[in-house]
Image (cartoon, rainbow, N blue to C red):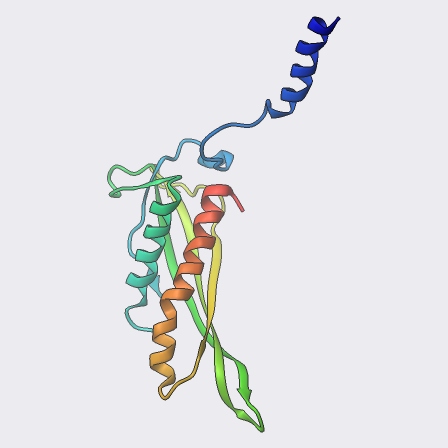
Length: 168
């Protein structure tokens, strides 16, 4: 009786794991994509030289994630094209007694992106992603904002890679 019960118990316990797989869990429309090319993003904002910072941060995040390899466009399964559409600063905290003077800002960076297959057709639907951070104001707001941009770009890159590699 005990010998017949053990395989039945083992089957019931391990039956719930039947659908799991090891490895990346990419969305269905990206099953055949293993390599991605990422050309420098376009910049539609008034912030100079931000496109290289954002593109480089996205590439580093893809390399850390490991779901897709970054390669040149001529050998890639897909190409990720992006456009930086917004860099916005909004006040978060003001000085006590003077609401016109700000001590802390939120900085948000927004990118629209599209993933193209080797044949030039769009894979999935185009998307948009954003990343942000906050920074305190010193003597020069422009310099403080410029120093906060890499942190906002890192969060943006995490969101973008998560959307593509996991589908959400």
